[in-house]
Length: 514
Image (cartoon, rainbow, N blue to C red; front, side):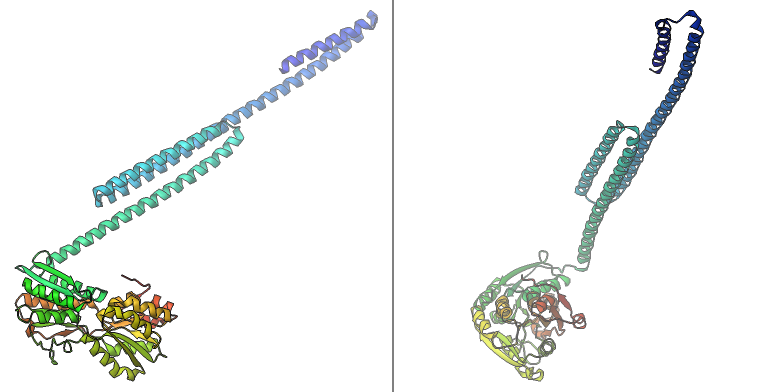
């Protein structure tokens, strides 16, 4: 282009010179001047030609350098991109190898179902990695189509973003893989521990030779009596009498009805069971009376006062073919606890069933020592569970708090008592752990599972023929433990200090109603 422009300029200069010579009508004598002009034009043209040539050369050289630099830049960009992709692929490959290794190790400890789930997760992870790589490559190809300078910057930014995104995804996948591996490991460990526990049980519980049938009569359905039954069967199993192997268990619940308790006991005698376990005083008295004319031994539990119930003599010996354990309340410890928690209280209300001998005797014990702690006992007797509603509604307006006994009828209607007490904003104290879990503020009570287990061991000795029921004195679970429900305290604006909480056997943070 620049050479054509130079030629045109030279031609124009010559034509101009010739025209000037012809048009002026000057004589041949003026030819030297024309020649001089021509020479001048020629020199100017040459100079201009040289300058143009030099400029063209310079411009070509500049363009060549810029082109070379652009090519080098593009080459470097492609190399950087390829390096970034290679590094990303290497990291992903490394991470995949590590993940695969960890997965294989976890898979060895897991079952076939776990292997399938992990394989699926690995496939999904691989698919996500491939999709991410394709997206990065597509983005890189698009950016390479732009100008050289912008391409390098954008490519670097895209590469950094891709690396960051890849690293984030890989880190997330690693965390998820590690979490899943830990969960699988924990599950395997839990199963292993459970298996070890079962093995220990199988080893330590040598099944006693023979086949035995027992009847369990439970007077009411509530936590403490349920715990007694659970502990009783545990005590038998520890001594070699395992339900489903050498032991058949007939279980019935009287639903807090004395008549029903008598019918249950009669049916066991009719079935000629090897032993009757009676849980709570009314069931124990019914079982004892039904078995009088048979040789079937009766082992009772959760009977607060066996002497008052006619099941034992004053010295603890049996009055017949019956023995068992007492859940006698630690009355004095309960009064001390109430005084510590409610320093300004003066009246304690107690609702009890007049037909339950253990409740009557416990009321008398409360009255005998309440004055020593500055309390007056306000009592209300009931006959059936239907009477609890009216008794509780009347009681809350007369007292500073209510203390429950192990009275089975009242405990069966505990939520009714709690409803009226909460409305009046007064606390209810329980007699054992389950009542505290279910909404009572605190209790000085016994462990009913331990009580049942103690009873089960007594029954096992009788089934083995090592002793008879009438040869064993009844036993007492004497340990009293402090149980506290902080959630109930907060509802009543009663805050326990840390030192007091530290002395509790167990502290509950919420109310759990079964």
